[in-house]
Length: 338
Image: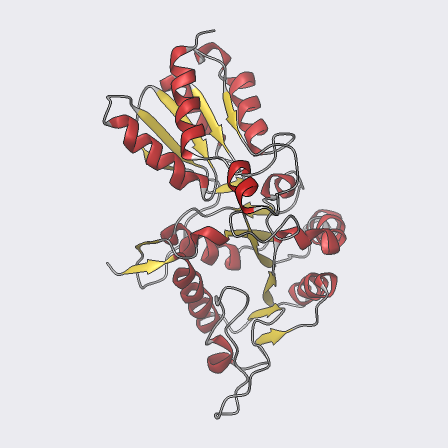
């Protein structure tokens, strides 16, 4: 099976879905660009991280559409296009910009099907970048998937590897409800085996990336990679850690999480979202409410502090959950008792 990067898997999925279904269109800032080539096709790098490179040359500028710098127009137009029968994939350059177009998501796209009694669908996919570590400052580095998961009527996807990114994005584009597809900047260069052909990964089905019986770690997006590394390190000491990657923040695979917690009796939750009202708090609450009798120790939460992402590179690295913090939390929960 070929090895592909996270970035390559997403680009390949966009290409395959556009070939499969002529209703799929792309919209976003600089996804084509303004550089004219000798062929007459305007083709730039393909967005901030090169994900849409080459697509305008194949599908034309009627289906790969450069927009003005206005997120409310991008997301609003995508919603309108979906209501007319298209299947738009709108790129929101950074998830931090969600505030500019939140009304279009929260009050319009998320509620259309409900308000109209199921007589319409809104097949919008919003691709967006999240995550700290690039020194991009507090306005380009947030992880707001937990906030978005609290909105009824939309689905929120957080792929942690290239294989999942391809299968989940294909599912998102074919879904008849709005989907926010959260791509972590730090994962674009990560690679794994990815099939060339089409495949779908259902929403709401978690992936067990490491099997164990002493401690459960639930992690989202890039944090899954860190959790796997800690689990592998502790396995050499005879400590058995199970790592659960929910894949989607909404719908959330509660059953897989509870099954693992009931088996291990100990839970560590890692998320790059904030410590309040986020996915880490949601998972901890789930365990406390529905698996309390199985818990042998208090739940450990590892999140950044309740502050914006620092601009300083040194402070930013301290702000992000680290391997050392995860390992300390696992050891702490193993030595604690209720």
